[in-house]
Image (cartoon, rainbow, N blue to C red; front, side):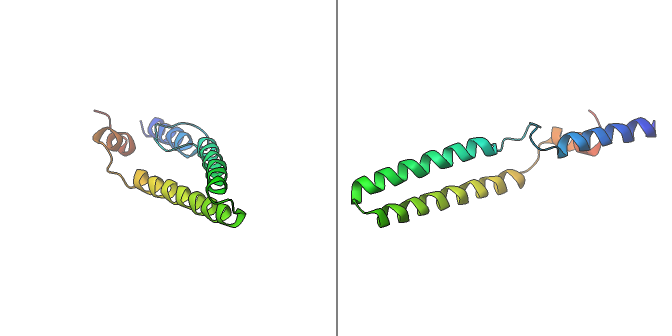
Length: 98
């Protein structure tokens, strides 16, 4: 009936809009991203300082590496959000079952 369909749609919206739950998306979780960012930043800083023995050059390389990593992460999120949907995803969102 219509009431059962609307209740099912409300539950689906609540599940898909909740933050922190895994809903089948293949994006990188923020905690994992932050750990990778911290690891790359520290590794970049230590290796740049060891290569140049200059704090200013080490800072510049570290800043460039962290900005590059954030840009790549942002582009991967854009790619994931604009990727073509599969046929099974379309049937779930349209409310029809096969």
